[in-house]
Amino acid sequence: MSTTTVTTPRGGPGLEQRRRLVTEIPGPRSRELMERKRQAVAAGVGVSLPVFTEAAGGGVLTDVDGNTLIDLGSGIAVTGVGNSAPAVVDAVVEQVQRFTHSCFMITAYDGYVAVCEALNRITPGDHDKRTALFNTGAEAVENAIKIARSYTGKTAVVAFDHAYHGRTNLTMALTAKAMPYKTGFGPFAPEIYRAPLSYPYRDGGLSGPEAAARAISQIEKQIGAGSLAAVVIEPIQGEGGFIVPAEGFLPALVDWCRANDVVFIADEVQTGFARTGRMFASEHEGIVPDLVVTAKGIAGGLPLSAVTGRAEMMDAPHVGGLGGTYGGNPLACAAALAAIDSFENDGLVERAERIGELLLDRLHRLQASDPRLGDVRGRGAMIAVELVDPLSGEPDPGLTGRVVAHCHANGVIVLTCGTHGNVIRFLPPLTIGDDLLQDGLDVVAEALAANR
Ligand code: PMP
Image (cartoon, rainbow, N blue to C red):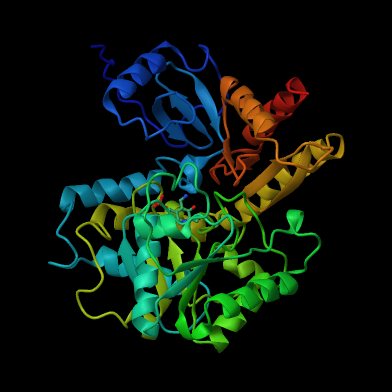
């Protein structure tokens, strides 16, 4: 069996912020480790870019072969404050030396309460709020639904076309895409219904209010507000293709929910924490969700998630009805307090907006001379391009795969998404520099040109 030399690489912003390849991608050590992975790790756990990470920070990730790659993925929108952000590292080190775990349900600790206070303060709306902490996005979505059912005494839940809410049984039911998320894994949780989304690029010109009326009419006909506990929606869809609903769609849904005693749940797992150029994507249209689900960016890379919402809803479940061994783990809470402080005080919301301007400007310029870029969309540091056959407008997942492979081979980490796998998404850490971002986009442009 091969071994890896023990080194103590340091991540964080101190890493040289420059793309530099010293081997092919993947290099020999990554290939060796991938072989070990194949022998040891369940095949269902895939890896998009078969390199092994050594360190990461700022806007780069270094691999075990000494290559430095540009990170345009943030580990799927997690390391918004940067990887190994110094304030997060310090907070976690301080906490790990005090205690690692007590289980908040057994003996409490102040970090948990402080994270809840912070989320109550920064999530949309100035009503009285409460928060509960969990470990993953999917777990938090499940708990939001438990809370909505407990509060309303109703059972049905509506999710939308192209939605992604996770891989647990209930969240698989909410997730729209069969392959790879659901195929072969049923039966799924009952009482989940799907409504049509507003998808401006493929909606035949429906306005936001028209798209909302279409969804509401379907909900009223097929379920009825009297049975409906909650509507759950990503304000900008993540895995589904970075679909920004037309203006007016989300506010109309919120109004209908409020008029019909239906809990409106915003899944801000991917869009939260400065990502879209606001602290939460709901703010772009001024909507105030009843419950907000957060995870990913919340704790600079440590596993933490939350449900934050109206006090009367959050307090509906009986004592002992919410929780879990690790939910609100002290290390994750320490990390979250440092991360939230950074989001609020290091200009990261403005930085996300600026990153969005750079990305949109460059991608729109590429689109002007290349009709395969069917749609360029998104907000802040959550931008995507939908690649299509220019003649038919049909999704082109083949081209998407080739462009992404070219980027990977040239040291740029980009991710795909979309129901048809034809969307390339850009989710850089908010700590990336402009030069690095431009270099990454140069490689994307090269990749498109090389695959004409
Ligand atoms: N909701 C959304 C919008 C997501 O993007 C994700 C993860 N991609 C989840 C829920 C599930 O989060 P997790 O993987 O932490 O369970």
